[in-house]
Amino acid sequence: MGVAIALGAMGAHYLKESLDLPTDKLESWKTGVLYQVIHSLSIFIVILLARTFRIDKVKAIINLFFLGMLLFSGSIYLLTLNYAWQIDAVKLLGPITPIGGLLFISGWVLLLLSFKNSRKTFD
Image (cartoon, rainbow, N blue to C red; front, side, top):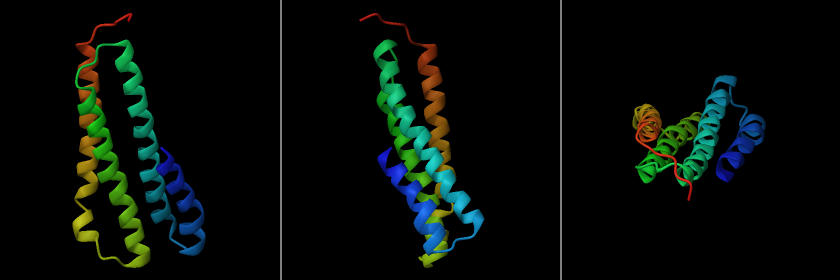
């Protein structure tokens, strides 16, 4: 979560002011930060819910969210920096973003299925 906040601040200040990025590139950066924040919070919520409900596959859900953040948000960050710094990573990074999105979706589906099969515990 802290990394997402730092990257959000970097986008709001450094990228906007120092690199003078176009609005669409800044919006992409914000999308990466937003999804990272949402899924960081979701990891905490899954951990808390696992204590109340017997949710199986907690590690798998957390791993899917984490890998989704790494691939989805990470590739957006690198694609944005590529525009400013001409890293020439577009060919490699282009297909990675949707894979990260699929990992997010898989994590949510697995969480939903885990809830369907769970039982509340009063430990």
